[in-house]
Image 1 (cartoon, helix red, strand yellow):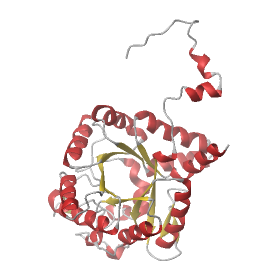
Image 2 (tube, helix red, strand yellow):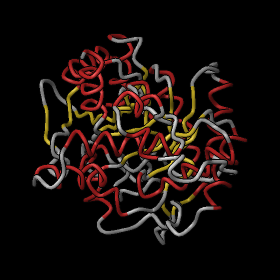
Image 3 (cartoon, one colour):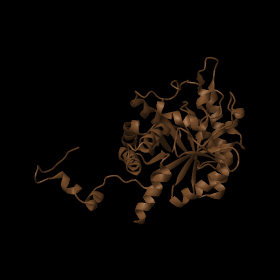
Image 4 (spheres, one colour):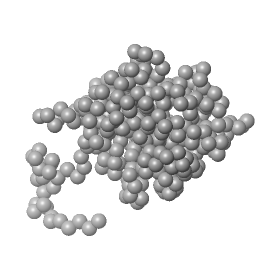
Length: 338
């Protein structure tokens, strides 16, 4: 980058920062409601909500109350929600059969949402950890190693069941090799040619996921285990580009980097070097840290949340999965109304 500029005092960098109007005119990035994806947890029953203890302000909803929440999201203009089911313990198995049950919780939630709000985009999580007795994202052998190809076969069934229920986007978050190609081929053969795939291509084996595992009820099954053999090593950056390139080649329409803020360098590399639709997930641990500081009065809620989301845009993210999506949309709407 060649910077041609005058020397001080001919060029005073603060001159353009003095007024609100000039700061607005020269802003290089902007956050809008169109950038927001809201992750939502759904549980069995009717007229039920449950607080997620490790994520203040976030609740699990039964489908009827999920629809009420979705109505507000539509009014706010949020374009897409991401669904995560809370699977009852008695439905968890070694082979994760509930993952592709046409009448399972996620599939019923998708049908209900698309019937009530066809204009609202619905994305589903394609992974087996909510459905396995051990909390891993796949089928294990006798040594506890995740078997790639058998897992992929089940992921294909799961993705098809989501598409048949009406999901607009299926989002494989499992990190199995070759699963994007297998899912894309199956979707094409079944006539779901316009079902989009958002591949969690650079999903790191991170310690920031703890509250999410509490929210979907897989933490207890994992019992202190880890996912190092299939999720990415936080030390690696070039590897992420290979993962993204493979997933795009196999048929992904867009890719995800997860977690978010600690991995904004990966977001930037993916967007600038591969120029593909790039999304990032401000994960549960990031949310919990922000909320802990906010609730203790150490950080100002609106200011810090909006700054954090703007940083994703600056890094190159086309959109952000964030538990702050609803609040951010409300703040944006209030600002627009002024």
